[in-house]
Image 1 (cartoon, helix red, strand yellow):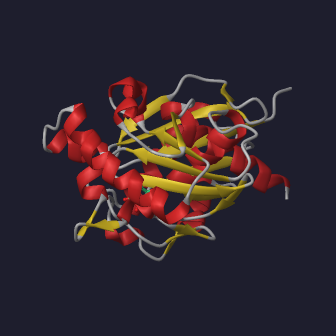
Image 2 (cartoon, rainbow, N blue to C red):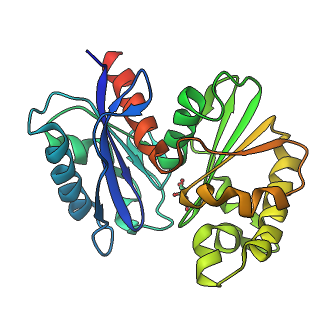
Length: 252
Ligand code: BGC
């Protein structure tokens, strides 16, 4: 019998989930998806997550649920809110979802979850040294790993460059908003990754987020010392990592 958990990935625009084989790092169901409720408020999101979880486990309430969220998550509490309602700041998110779902829930930062999936099952499998995971989406998510160990809540998407929070310039949302070509966007990505490289000297940089499936259009334009590679688990990485972390947490 596969070791199973449910993974839910909450984003600024959509919430998606699936049933996961947490040992193989594969999806055991189709992905279910719904729009993020307007305003991104806690009770509205919790209700939608409960609906998705219900679709995935048929109401059995027995599987661990891992939820990843686009904010700092410290010991189950959401501590920031860059692209989501400010009502999440300081909220006991573990408690909110546990009450709504009626079971043990583990909430983590979305980039940390995606990074865990890439470390365990994807582009950084067995990679030692310093790995920097980045996700280019509505914001920029980052996760740092040293010899496979996560340093949680890195929040390097908000690095200030040229006097601005650089996620507002180099995220995929910024590319779309400003209608930048891939080569124009790559100029900003070069600036961003060069700064990260100067600060951390990573051994490997992974680029995730939906746009990473078009990596051939922009990764070859970047000149960096570190190897920079596309995520392998792409848009499922958050779901896989959240589920794997929840499963391990439920065994502790
Ligand atoms: C948030 C991070 C999150 C990233 C990707 C940023 O704006 O501050 O916590 O990981 O967006 O969603």
